[in-house]
Length: 429
Image (tube, rainbow, N blue to C red; front, top):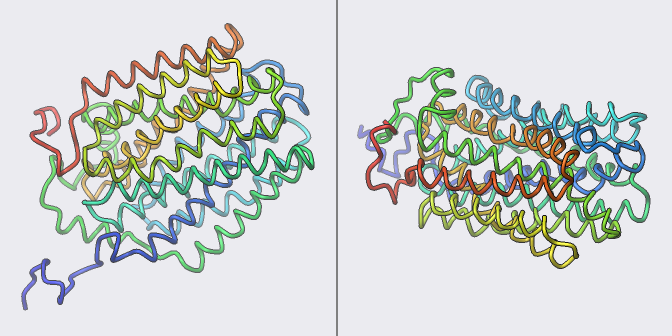
């Protein structure tokens, strides 16, 4: 009997591709939207909760919840990839939802800021397990040719949900107060997400194994240890490590925007609904933009979008730092979202391009470890700088760092997309 993998009449393993797995892929898009929605419950409300109910006046102290979230999520991302390879994707996804259950309850009943920090430790575990796993599962399903589109759809769903929830919680807080109404929405997301994951999500590890068995190209073989993968993604491999540092700086920006921009806007006298609009605008453009930039990276390559996106983010941060009106801040937030949309799905697609299917989940985990460490680095850096030179001074400093990150990618990273690669440098092998 022929074993020709190209013969559709005699499939040897799971079918790869977006069309062949459309129902399960779209279900995972919906699940990731719920994951993003849980995160979005904090974007507008929590910075103001710290200032108004817990009287946190030092920016460094106020950003401890983002520090706790980022550090926990970064470490959890690493273990999500390793555990997904060892035990399968679905058990890790379910564990992520179970960990999230206490989060809205802790935020609603928190008598002190320590409870808020504890809730964000759990939130970091939830996001690290659940979001990482939906990324890995979509890469498993779609195969090697449409990763940019797959990551664009995944990240768009997550961050559009962040934006919609930030807007909704701003309106709820304006009408009903900062607690408990905004966080009840998060509790509903968790219940629906857990139910869908238990009843309808199917395991996808077999798709990765099938792709690994038919994998014929790439600079790296499949038999790498976790330590070797960690070294490659962190510093040894030019494209993987360039993606890691750009991801870290990108989320450093997000930590700044999440923790300090609502305080900046409130100090200027903006109302809660208008602060909610600005808090939602950035992730809304980010989310919608990824529907275009993900597939665009499949056409023009990964590197141009990553470099351009980082430089646009730097300019947007400068505009926000120098602005003093709703219009200027809205323009800056929209540009920040556009630059992030160019970078976010493209970095994940680049990781998928280079990593062998046998250790791709671990590579995604290591990349997301560095990327989400940016939340912790951003919270600490932005808080210290804001206490020293104010929020605007901190924003200018982060803008300069973002520009430097984009230039480093321009110098060090090679093109990774299979349709655009001319020749990889010797150091990439």
